[in-house]
Length: 158
Image 1 (tube, one colour):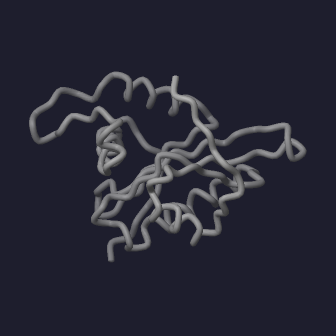
Image 2 (cartoon, one colour):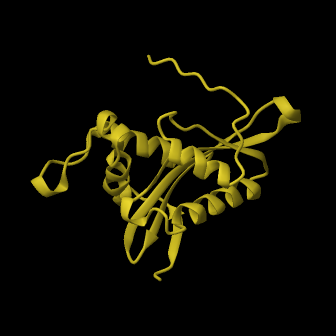
């Protein structure tokens, strides 16, 4: 088995990350990623601007998982300072994707274990995430990692 490594994303990873984000039914409806096989132009400038903002923020960590020189997963980790819970920091995990052909191989679990360790190293007292209610398989996976559905999340599209 080829080992999987995790690292901070670089600008050169952006197309692979965006393709991972678009590679499921929800992502297909909300991402604007060109198909690299059709010779489409560069990524939409909104992705580039977002990457630059994430990369410049010391409380953001955009991560890729690599195996055999291929990007096989990604996630965004946000370190959130707070006053509640006696000034406790939180780690927020979002935009998690593992390439379809690499699901069920332990790579997602390893990616989460790595991200949780990053939170510990930054002094976070808890790690939280959200998942779309339609992603029932993801919810079961997160529960297997020890995450509990303790709160009800709400969103307001603007």
